[in-house]
Image 1: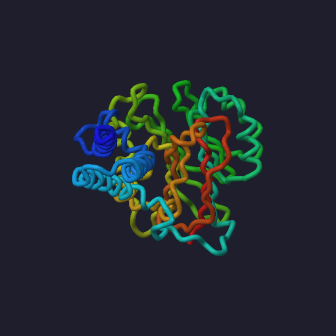
Image 2 (image 1 turned 180 degrees about the horizontal axis):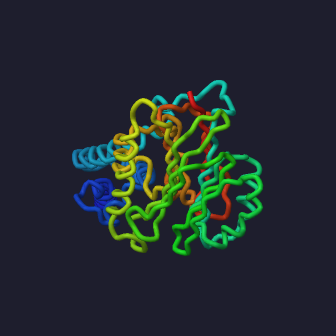
Image 3 (image 1 turned 90 degrees about the vertical axis):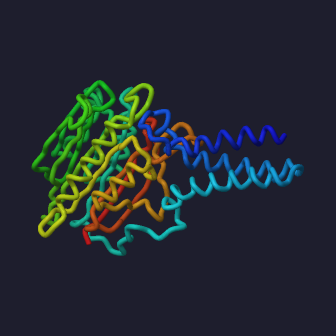
Length: 325
């Protein structure tokens, strides 16, 4: 029994320290994602040791200490995404609808053809902006029923899982599309005009993840995210526009890269102090983490933040409504 606990503890500690290795390889960086799951396994391991083993107490105490240290390290990363810490973005008591913007961020999964689910959800929630990711020409055609309600659109259909579409009820200007870091991996940048007449700078992004089927390393993703963060940091100053960044970042909220993105850009994460709002994987309850994000400048307060029902994709849509202070 003691040998079993040594093996399980060594395995969980290895998963905990793996992201600390000086490597961008997906086999290292992937373990930044399941911190919630690893923390849960560490708790189960500690409970099992306490319940099932009562010999060699000195060695067991050492093993328990190692597990507790690993658990504390995992909690250090995920604690901000629980209600146990103060919120970063205050909730507004009475929002002015003309100064509010509601965004649905939806990774539709290119091979998913259940477009009516998404259309029904959009008609129900009435967002100002819908951002679809992994949307190809099939999805562009399937979402034509939304055109009348969303006359301002940006189409970037691709067949490589990185197509992107923006549907907006708000007028859009200064629209640019770019494949900033990788060919075939676009982002969309524009200015949205609120009903109040105020402008908001919007960035919609979907960098490729580190994985055995995509990029072997996280380098390209990190370059795109941190490059955007540095660009946003230059906006700061009198007369600068409020900023929103939305998309599937293929990175979890608690990763060092996302934390560096927030620190450099100066943007806020409305999930901090509220919850993780895990959007992936929609079909696997025990393997979920927050991949879809909406960050914003300190000009906003929160109206609503919620994970929406599934739409046949491997991602849940994320709804964020914020209002200018």
